[in-house]
Image (cartoon, rainbow, N blue to C red):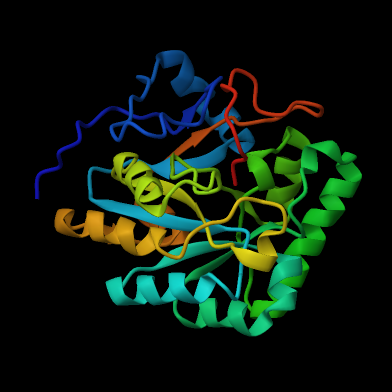
Length: 279
């Protein structure tokens, strides 16, 4: 099947100063690989985070942050099962410990379990030693709950600094950001949220969503159980396949970026002010 998206040369590492990707325009504009960049890639790659993969195939990874949530995660799992889709769930270890049976259900249904942290705190506001200890704690706790090794990490709020990225690598964790989102934390109607995610689709996307609502959300805006079914309905006629992040990265070349949030900053350098929170 011919892809409706134009193909662009993509370097293994991109140095970006604003948002990780043009989240809501579908097609991705990628910089050409310069001779200088080609020489620097081996040096820059260890300092980078994964954002998506390079392909023209109609594949994407749906990712869900902040769960598992007994009020929302089961409906997300049901929608994914009806579509035959696999997804990656970036869980908070404290939440997984409160709902261990649900966390294990996610794994048992063939989805990928990944780490989002212990609780939803901004690691860049912690001393590095404390943030590193929390990272190790989260990995060990989540592995204890689900009984499998955790290999992927997405920082809460998408906020990470170089020292913590290196610590994640020492723990065997690949840091994953995203290339498309729905901004499902803003409290918009589910039809609008699903449309936003649909417009942001692109081959090889890593899509940011959330599976949290009700008591587990606390003071944060709520996700909706209707969003995922609506999104899958929109995507179905186009023949998309849904893989985990691990499956995507095993099959396709990586697209990566340098994405650091210095201590005291509320968002990465150059990023536009955006209401709500990310991840």
